[in-house]
Amino acid sequence: MAIEITDQSFKEEVLSSNTPVLVDFWAEWCGPCRSLSPIVEELSEEFKGKIKVVKLDIDSNQEIPVEYGIRNIPTLLFIKNGEVVDKVVGVQPKEKLVEKLQSLL
Image (cartoon, rainbow, N blue to C red):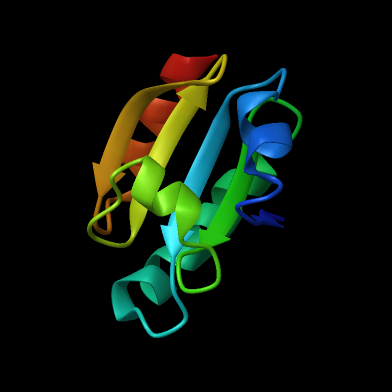
């Protein structure tokens, strides 16, 4: 299950994580976000213990999206050792996301 995070918990949950992190920037009103959500949940189960999967609602949390230049949603950031190593904007096939996550391991 993906972890819901906030602007306040971002540093602890993401930047200080010992494992790579997939951050899903989303909003309740976003149709493509809703279609990507089940894939993100599947990835959180498949990579459990290897990669942390978190979700950040951009309507409730606006500091981090601005800081990371998130202009469109859904946006997925792949973060390792506190650094963004990859970024995907829009709905992507699960296989492509699996490849990107495996490259973080």
